[in-house]
Image (cartoon, rainbow, N blue to C red; front, side, top):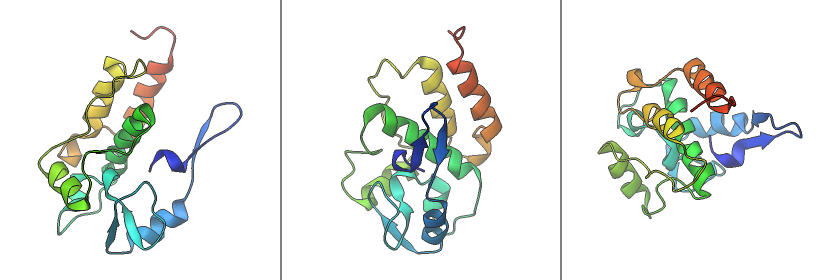
Amino acid sequence: MSRANILVTDDFHCCLADFGLAIAAAESEAWVLSSSTTGSGKGAIQWMAPEYLAEYHSSHTSRDIYAFACTIVEILTQHLPFPDCKTGYLVVSHVKANGRPLRPQSIWCTDKLWDLTTRCWAQNPDNRPTATEVQSNLIHLGSPNHN
């Protein structure tokens, strides 16, 4: 998931695209350091959860929650996650050492949004919120009465 794969309708509903590329890319062993999964990569490593970067990774649905948090940062900064890591090796090393992108200096990055983002980045996939919990948090953040 990256901002390039999020389509916004005229009434501001978001839709995810490129599922076919994501499935095909997941079957490849190559990593790509970019904002796209085009080519023969299993995806752009800036969005890959730490457990997926391990030599013997398990497939865990919470890796999408981790990628979603990276996409939040990408949208708020208009930059790829980990812009200072110029190689795939640096990204992998940083993420495995529990490194995460810095908090964006944006008026849109409220404390509650940042708290949700950091919970989505939990090193242990079992400690990340579920998609339902993320949705509930986002709905609350979008309500006019949230503080």
